[in-house]
Length: 203
Image (tube, rainbow, N blue to C red):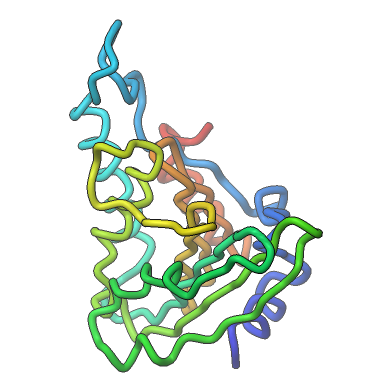
């Protein structure tokens, strides 16, 4: 079963491209940091404590949602200017630990309008240890702040949108930047469990 088939079977008409998943019934939004800002007060200096908390909360969420032996899809959307897409945008997959996984990537390309096209890449991984997920998460959180590393580089593209999908428990996790993430659940029972668990962080 490929990723599109899996998505349709477990979530119906959800479309990760147009972010319709955030309006689904079993979605929660989790704040990564409370009561702090990216920059220090009255300064252009990066607030290191803010990003430390963003990294820590993101990793805690990921490690809670993805157990050691659970398979997952690692999905990346790359938006680019028409006719200027370059495969270098897929360097995000260099974070796969096994070289053979880097050649097991499937993708579809969709034209959004005359100015933009989107490519979706998905790779099926046996478990989370196949991915250097801490570095990926850090790059997502850093993407709007050039002094911070690691970051995803882009050529004629926007920052990639990254999704982690737990196949066994049917959970989609999308950390969109340092501010927060969306979680989509495939059933009401799992949704209720995590909604209660993260109630202090839900906005």
